[in-house]
Image 1 (cartoon, rainbow, N blue to C red):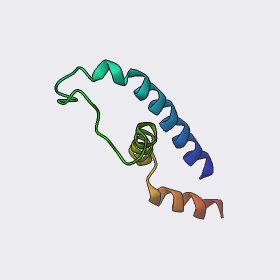
Image 2 (image 1 turned 90 degrees about the horizontal axis):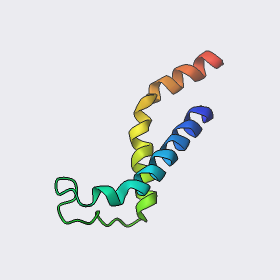
Image 3 (image 1 turned 135 degrees about the vertical axis):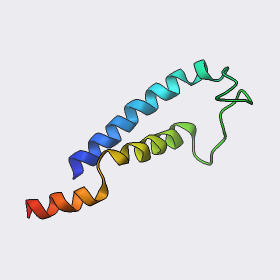
Image 4 (image 1 turned 90 degrees about the vertical axis):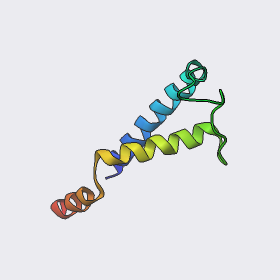
Length: 74
């Protein structure tokens, strides 16, 4: 289970880095950012986008499958 969560965290980190590197390219697109500025969050933008990607990638392996894997390993 830790391998799956570690892989998910690493994948979220890679996507977060690329998102923050290319954010300036997309700020001029009126349909993505009408105010030409990203939304302000309570957290720094890189932390907020990391959590966003982590939650999005959590759908790769459902929680019920974790329990099934643990029962099979027992």
